[in-house]
Amino acid sequence: MSKRIGIVLNNVPAYSETFFHNKISGLLARGFDVTLFAEKNGHVVPQGWKVVSPRSLPGSKWLRSIYLGAAIIKILVA
Image (cartoon, rainbow, N blue to C red; front, side, top):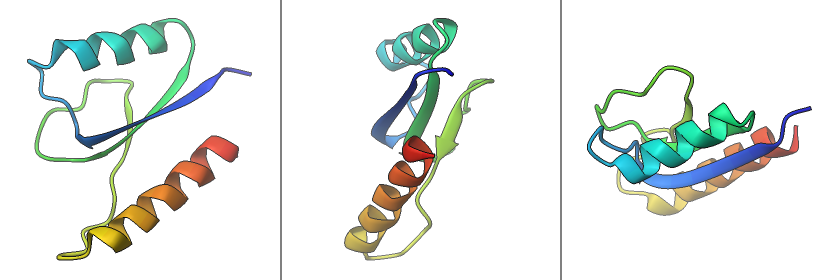
């Protein structure tokens, strides 16, 4: 069984944000099951990355936070 890790960011990192790309790629290479919880903002998601994006709930950050929290628990506990 692989170790699971969830990373919460505001947005999927842009290609130029090498810190996040290197960290996530390094964890994947070491056998971790990595899930990125972030808004899909048009940036290209690298192959092999799993991204969970909160539903669009205009004007309600509170509801988006609840949805994201529930998604994190569901994936990491399963």
